[in-house]
Image (cartoon, rainbow, N blue to C red; front, side, top):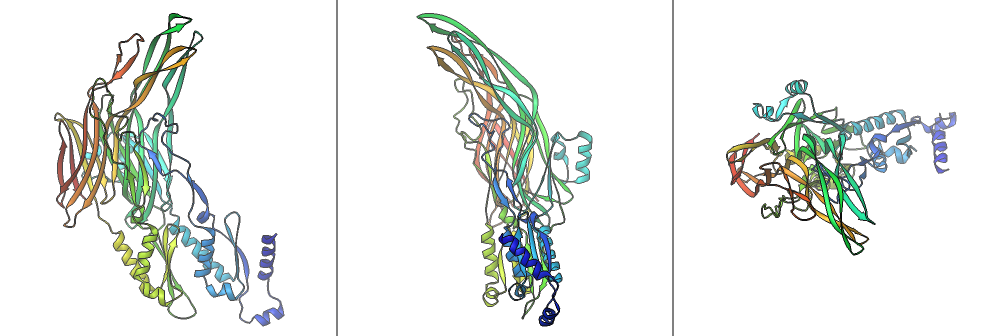
Length: 594
């Protein structure tokens, strides 16, 4: 009822003035009613949870496969903020003195009663907000076969689109993922097909009956990614967590012929049950870090590693299609009743406010391999899943406070001037001279370091077992997981019913590969400091099914592997250099500044 009454009043106020009213109004401009859509600015969407499991196979007690909880409801701007911005920027005195009206309706619309020229200014302001705060970038991630081609590229990891397209045309892509980016808003998804397998089965014996109850699990053959980004002058700064998975060998099927001696009415009897366990050999490469994707270039992350199940040899191809948005929009002049005209600047989110990908260090808890303890550990990170989450290094509020301090004198003396947050960006309403001061300060803050390319090789006894290359930005940690993820039988338990016991196998996800966590920092004299936290477990032969040698006639998998655990800080000259870490298993790192 209130909404209908307001609309009726608005229509009456928008009607042409009668003769007497027109004579009394003098130079008053005629009012018109117009609808402006703001749905793109205020539309609430559910973003994915800011966490991603970097392993393809679901872990024990992990029913969701590591995806985490529900997504968070997000919107770019609040409706009330858009209304306040329009009233502040577009002829503020008219809303108080001339009877202009502005109201929001359901469905993402602003209904405005104001003169035609004011309506045009409102349309221009909303269009600027959409163009510069809702960018049209599109992130593309491809998994390409083969990983050695990028190592011979003289241009490093960044290659021209034409070169990348030639490789794509020659070999094709195994998988492709596309997501549309919104400034600092996490987006992501899963792309590919689900592969199911029998991960475990129960043998239940009750009332002299034998049953086999299989349990089914799944893994994604394709790509999973989570990303957020902001536009910068050189392209798009993207914070990315991506995992690609594809089989490297046919799935093995292990059949079990399990026998148990059971008690039935004071007598002993033997019962047998048959089960089957599928063992998929999933080759994967997972990357978490911050990268700069220039326009017209493709970023290659090549990986090649030799495992007992087969070779993982692939390249992640990252591209960003840049839209018409710009890092900063300026609307000037904004007339006011007296004094110098003001400049409205709408700045995209600061690149530094992307923060860090928070990654738990790869705490190695294993004391070594033995026949009695065949597993290195459940995962490279002990009992904690290698999960990546987005964190903040510099908050938007902190950047806003810094910008305000640069022009505090102007803010104290002129009530028209403002410095404030605009969604995930920054809005300033200042004289041109003061606006230039803020722009220069933010450019200094976000200039950053060009970073480096890090190339790595893994050797065992002098034999090259793997190599890869990743881009490292200064003060931004990155991580790389690669290898084969498969299942093994780790032990047995027993289901008891009606005084009868039966065996049931327990499975475990097992890694044949390596994990690497790197943080590159620059010292006060320009030297490079590289924090290296790494784990490697490379099988010397495929896992063997060995009988436990008791009356149950059960079997478990036995593995032997070469292992490496590193947690070191390395100092290198400003021009870069190389270092070799480890012992029997060696990790060679080469840092090449950009």
